[in-house]
Length: 174
Image (tube, rainbow, N blue to C red; front, side, top):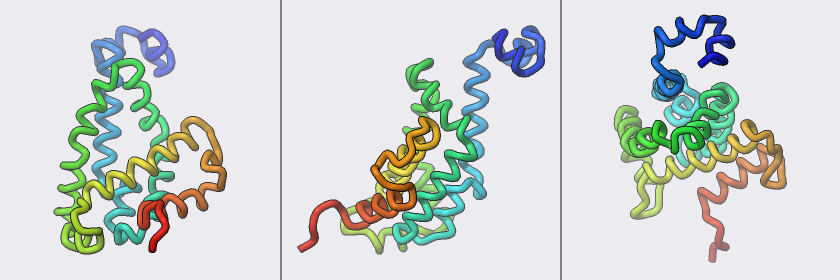
């Protein structure tokens, strides 16, 4: 708390006046990030609502890049939560992810169109969640961990290849 107070230019007592402990500060930061993620202007939400999934996978990939760049400090909190708090704070976020995507699709009238494009029996929610997680992981490694070209190719080529795999699978088509 002393370091937090010093970095904020406040007395330790003033910090304690607003937050009883560092976990409360952490929770407040995560709550703010989760609120930002629910906004229409959030890069991934904008790309998902303006495009046509899965045709716009490359755009979603670049939106994930923009999201990790712009909200880098918040994305890093997920890793802090895993190390410091055993994932206690982000667990609910991930548990509710399918519900949030379902609500997003319904509010944008996207359900039927998405379902009509996917292979029989595939869930639009699962498809978008898979793409989201892959792109977020790719850019977390690239931006947070500083590992450029970790797929053995440049970012744009990697996003194209990931998108192609997501659209068509890995196996040769007969």
